[in-house]
Image (cartoon, rainbow, N blue to C red):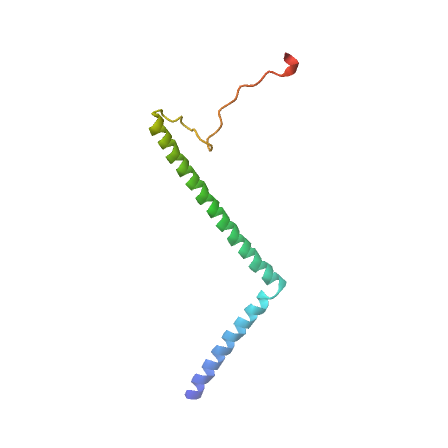
Length: 100
């Protein structure tokens, strides 16, 4: 019974080590390295995107705070949609030199 137990433990250890060695060998191939690099780049791009979204949210919040502060101090209501991130107001066109 004891020999059968140790035989089972040895088989399980051999299978585990064999699988780990196979995975390490696959990761050392050019395709495995490219896959790892692709995953790292994808993760970095996600982190940069999340950072940018956090920055934009902070900028918008700070802009709102500054607009409220100016409104309170000046006593004038803020223009709706005023600020850098709002759509620009349409500009009047200049007459061309050829018409003059």
